[in-house]
Image (cartoon, rainbow, N blue to C red; front, side, top):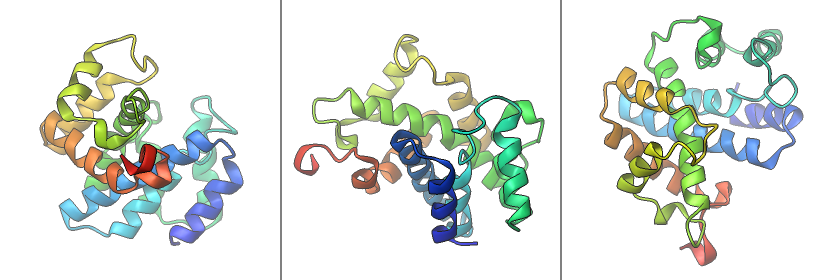
Length: 189
């Protein structure tokens, strides 16, 4: 169960370029938190890659992420990865206990929000995004209105980090992956 297998599964079930990029963004954030907590970076990364792999086919709760869990179970993916994926959806009523579970929940909505923040910048680059501007955009309910802001705040709290620190960790992680995310800007700005 490695990154190649996770990417293959993601590509099999997910055709949307934006959803694939979201998976890559969450993967980058999960890698950063795995390093921070001294955990298995690859295990956390594949959890981030796979967290929404079933969403395109089964977007409605509880099918997502339950259908994905069934597929992962059949394929022999480890329980801790499957449990983390289930726990990222509040309606599944799977308590987030481990650092990996808490990190996945915390990174999911924020990765999407940071992407939206980059896309409105002149060069569509994560390098143009700053923590202060992200916090300002969080207060604007009309901006990226499908993003659940309460999950971003709760995620940072569950991780035991300040909102500023959480934004910076994910922003730095996504900047490192910016070319794959399509958010490196014109000539890497």
